Image (cartoon, rainbow, N blue to C red):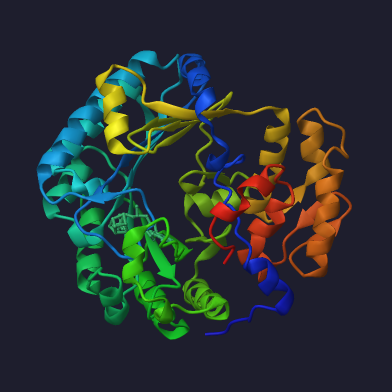
Amino acid sequence: MTSSALTPAQRVHAERNLPRYTSYPTALAFDAQQASEAHAWIAGTNPADKLSVYVHVPFCRRLCWYCGCHTSIAHTYERVGTFFETLTREVDLVAARLGEHDGLAHLHFGGGSPNALSPEDFAALVTQLKAAFRPRPGAEIAAELDPGMLSEAFVDAAGDVGVNRVSLGVQTFDPTVQALVNRIQPYDHVARATERLRKVGVAGLNFDLMYGLPGQNPENVYESARLAVQLRPDRVAVFGYAHVPWMKKHQTMIREADLADLDGRWAQAEAADAALVEAGYVRIGLDHYALPEDAISRALAEGRLRRNFQGYTDDPAPVLVPIGPSSIGQFREGFVGNHVPTDQWSAAVARGELPLNRALAVDDEDRVRAAVIERLMCDMRVDVAAICRDHGFAENHLAESLAATDALQLAGLCERNGAVVSIPEPARRLMRVVAAAFDARLPQAATRHAKAV
Ligand SMILES: C[S@@+](CC[C@H](N)C(=O)[O-])C[C@H]1O[C@@H](n2cnc3c(N)ncnc32)[C@H](O)[C@@H]1O
Ligand code: SF4
């Protein structure tokens, strides 16, 4: 296991609170006043638009103390069942109002844990969504599932309705760390879930791993990643624990004394990276890895890698339809967000309204900056002048942002050659800092994001 340490110049930047740039502008810029405009965007999709649909299931069967997701614990099925009924009404509402389109390219279930739904309800939901949005041949149907609470009946139902990609939250295989975060999940359990998913035809498999959790160190992070790759998922994401107990009360169950400092976190991330690269995985953007033959590795090699709310993807769909509380969507004219609290979301659906409560229209200035940021986050290299030209601006339109990268070059975070900015491999994990140089909206939003490492 080899690793490089954080340099003093990098450390200053690693402390910054920055967005993850799964979109630009980021969701913090959305506002309530623009929500009414978004109805026309939804109705105005065009026949050439391929669809992506994101469905958020805000329930889990257990509460992991590190969790930063929008979820709550369903102690009985009653609440989940009521939620399911509302979700089916929302699907009908959205399908009735959406304009023409060219079919569904990508259906993604996130959460929470979509396997908090019963196998029957999940299968009925997928069937309804397929009827409503017409999957294209080869469409991806993906779900994020909690392997610790994954029944064989759920796996079988997922296979039957055509789920072809699953992301399992693995996080760590270390039993001491698992106990410290209230998530007991033995290796054999994950191995059995993996085997059964493959048996029912789920060909695409992603594992989420984490570093920076209480009790983690480079050795046990390396060992967890080594065990994970023995199961040969085609993709792995490695997330740094974001500790925000003032926003997520249950994180107060985690003792700060058990958390590594910045240098420790960096060493843990390096350890996961070493295990994955040694096992033949290709680095994808900020925090993803994939086998060389996987579709996102090929997309990276061919300059087609995209970044969206679900992370890295080869999905080129220009329209993302949001379903479920807190879901975020994207249309040509801008972004939309559903109500976050489940009761407000369900009250809107009960009134027969689309449950949107915030939106953001984007203009050409946003689009050109978004394109530069996306190329940096995907390719670690961007020709800023070419992107300005392609968007109808003068080649020097973003000269001020380009000049701002010079200070970052001195810190070793990027290299600039005229209007071409590239990020050297040792600074990969700090790519958000370079992207932020092109973010015109950052100053007012900066403190609400997690640290850059
Ligand atoms: C919706 S969950 C995945 C599915 C399922 N709920 C599970 O936990 O297995 C999404 C992922 O977010 C990551 N995550 C959750 N809380 C986090 C936090 N506070 N900081 C960083 N990553 C976090 C975890 O890796 C988790 O697998
Ligand atoms: S990590 Fe996953 S299973 Fe755990 S509480 Fe969060 S969303 Fe639920």
